[in-house]
Image (cartoon, rainbow, N blue to C red; front, side):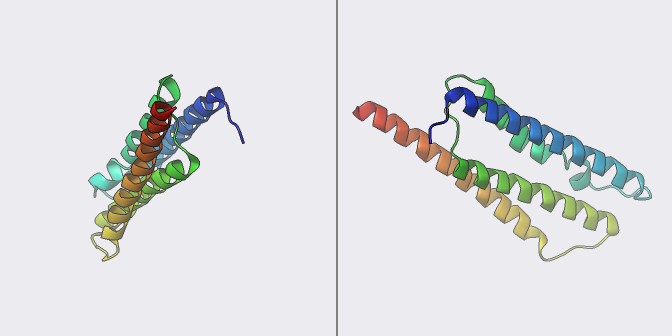
Length: 139
C-alpha cells in the first residue's frame, strides 16, 4: 500500500494535535484533582501534562512540519506512543498516591516500561532511517 508523503505529514500533524489535546485534558484533570485535594499537592500530578506535550505533541509536530525528515512506521509510532502513555498513566497514579499519602510497589513498572517502550520505538525509527539511507546509497 502506497501512502504519499503529504498524507504521512498530515498524519504526523494530526497525531501532534491529538497529543496536544491529551496534554490539555491532563492539565484539566490535574487542576480539578488539585482543587479537591485539600491543600496537598504532588509534582507528578501538577506536571502530568508534560509527558504527552513533550513526548508526543512536540516530536510529531517536528515530524509533521519538517519537510525532509522521514515519517516513522506504524510499528515505531505505536511503540513510542505506548511508552508516552505508560509514563503519563504512571505519573497520574504516582500523583494520586502521593496526594493520598501512600505508595505502591507497582509504581516503578510504569517508569521502566514507559522508558523502555520509548527507547524501542526510537530505535525502530532510527533503524528504518538508517536502512533507507543505506538502500539509497546502494542504488
